[in-house]
Image 1: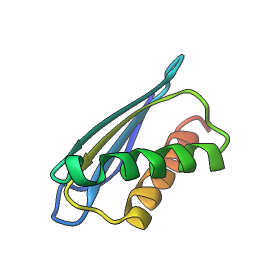
Image 2 (image 1 turned 60 degrees about the vertical axis):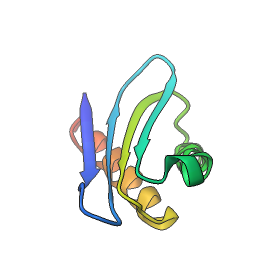
Image 3 (image 1 turned 90 degrees about the vertical axis):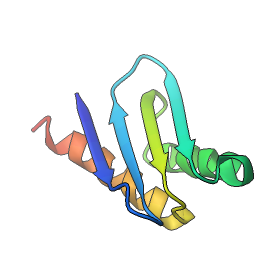
Image 4 (image 1 turned 180 degrees about the vertical axis):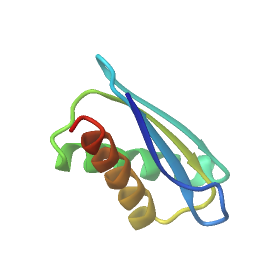
Length: 85
């Protein structure tokens, strides 16, 4: 099962999540050297806030701000949940 949210437009990100047996985070970003740790922290905190400990997350970032990354991940999580109903 896979879900995604966002785009590859400037100042946005495309988040794709897949169910997994472990936590895996893959980040590709135009600002990875400067903000890679911050992007990972936003992803980890958002997963924690949603009580998710195991997930494969791919973030293709084009300079998105923290709140955009968080909202894209939350939307993907919601879409994955809706697909089980």
